[in-house]
Length: 117
Figure 1 (cartoon, rainbow, N blue to C red):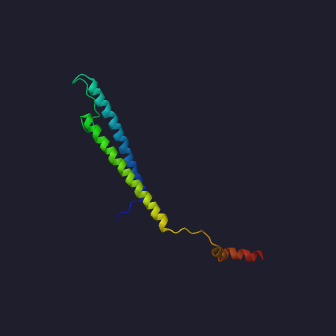
Figure 2: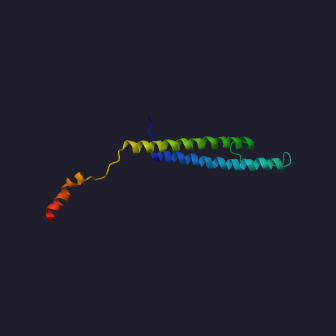
Figure 3: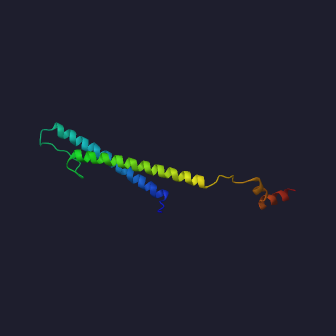
């Protein structure tokens, strides 16, 4: 199974976030174009973002769909990363850094005690 590093997940999340901002911007421009078209006399003013579609209502709906899909993707990625953290914590048992017996068997500490006496 393909293992993706945390830095790769961060890059994917950042890319999806950038596309969400672009989609919101396209929705803004498309809404302005639809309002401008509805208030202008027929055929005189036509405003569009000019990137993909000439029809602002189509661009508006495509960007809405992209926002829905990307939000769903970000939610799935978040759940995946949270499950990975839980599995990581469950697989490593929690134990103290030092126990009394490990400190007593430490040669450096035992030497220091011998020098003190």
